[in-house]
Each structure stands twice: as structure tokens, then as C-alpha cells.
Image 1 (tube, protein in one colour):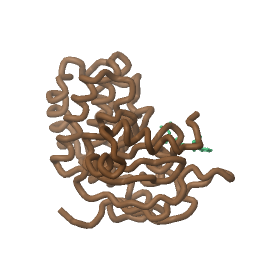
Image 2 (spheres, helix red, strand yellow; image 1 turned 120 degrees about the horizontal axis):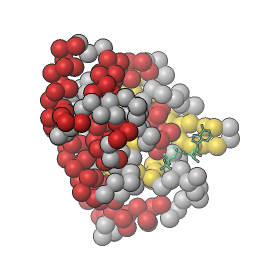
Image 3 (cartoon, protein in one colour; image 1 turned 90 degrees about the vertical axis):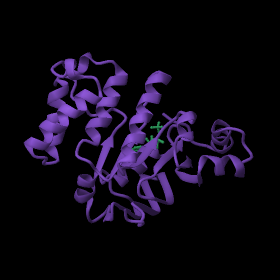
Length: 248
Ligand SMILES: Nc1ncnc2c1ncn2[C@@H]1O[C@H](COP(=O)(O)OP(=O)(O)OP(=O)(O)O)[C@@H](O)[C@H]1O
């Protein structure tokens, strides 16, 4: 595995009108790590993530993802990553099997690859009996697990997850994190936003955004130590307290 950073961001900024949604953030992500990207509502996480995914042009600053430049090579970035947005992108009126086939097809995978991997995936998710049912009929937690599986189906180098476990129970969240660990074990770098502080503890390193800026970045243990906090909850509260902006 390369030791080069898989994500580099330097003074990355996004301005909407006069509003600095992302205000000069700089950080690196190492290959294979689980990187938690935290911040209160409206802090700028989704905006930053969209720039890194090649979905939105920065106003200024620089960033590379998987070695590709966000300004010059957004299409190459899109092919190297998986992305699970907050409003995850499964088609409710397609079946589970059709959704897998659709997304795998976008990445130009061969029929043999898709067939073999779909069978394996349905088995892993215990969804063999449900494969021909509409996604609409699945409970939320299952949709999230399926959306994650679809996001990494093409075996990307990095997967970006925007609040992947919002609204589900703790047991399902734990199962979801087991899937994240498995993906990381296969060498996929995981970049994840979350509002759940127990999930922040599962990350190798965590950055905390406040009003468009990164206020702190370290391992969970390092953050707790430097902020003299007993828990990540306390770390977050100490930093987010400074926020002027409120979410919408
Ligand atoms: N296209 C846009 N035009 C104008 N303002 C925007 C646009 N997109 C985002 N914003 C603003 O930028 C700020 C940051 O939004 P963003 O969605 O990145 O925050 P976030 O940290 O992901 O929040 P959440 O946790 O609620 O998803 C918010 O105040 C939002 O209203």
C-alpha cells in the first residue's frame, strides 16, 4: 500500500455569495484509515465532502483525492471513490437486485463480476429471499446497509459516507460499523461524517469542523487528552460551543 496520503486538502474553501460555507480547511487522510469528519449541523461537512468527491468546484484552495486533482480530474476522482449521500441514492422503485446491477453497470464492471459479486453480497446481507423485492419495502437500516454495499461494490480506493447511520437503532448502527471495519480491512479508506459520538470513537482519527473551519484533528484519545475531556461528547461540546452559525 502506498504511504502517500490518499486525500490532501490545503486551504480548501467554498463560498456561496458572501457566505464561507467551507473556510480554508487543510488536512490529510492516510490510506486505509477510518477518518471521522465531525461538526454540528451547518458546519460545512457536506459541502467539503462534495468538493472532495468531484461533485462541486472549490472557490479556492487545493485538494487531491486518490492522487487526482479536484479541479482538473473530477471524473477520475468519481471513478476512484464510492459515495453514500445523506439521501442515499438507491432507487426505491427498483428491486434490490436491479439497484446493484444499475450501480455496478455505471462503473463498467463485467457481467461475470457483477453476477458473482451480487450473489456473494446478497448472501452476506441475508437478503437472498428479498432480492427481487422493491427497495421501498426494506426497513431503513437495511436500506443503509445496502446503500453502503452498493457504494463499495466496484471496489473503490475510498468511500465517502455522509451520515450513513442517521435515524437507526444502536444495534443496526453497530452492524453498519462492522461493515465499515470489514471494508477498511480490505484496504478501502473510509471518510465518514456522523453526529453520533460513540461512532467517533470507532474512527482512527477525527476532525471537528466549527463554522466552516477545522478546529481540531487527532485520534479520539488525543482529542480527549488535549481538551481534557472524559468523552468524545465532551470534546465535541467544548469545540462546538464556539459555533456562531446554526444549522438549517
Ligand atoms: N448551494 C448552497 N447555497 C447556499 N448556501 C449553501 C449551499 N449549500 C450549503 N449551504 C450552506 O452552507 C452551510 C454548510 O452546509 P453543509 O450542508 O455543508 O453543512 P453540514 O455540516 O453538512 O450540515 P449537516 O450536518 O446539517 O448536514 C449551511 O449554512 C448551508 O445552508
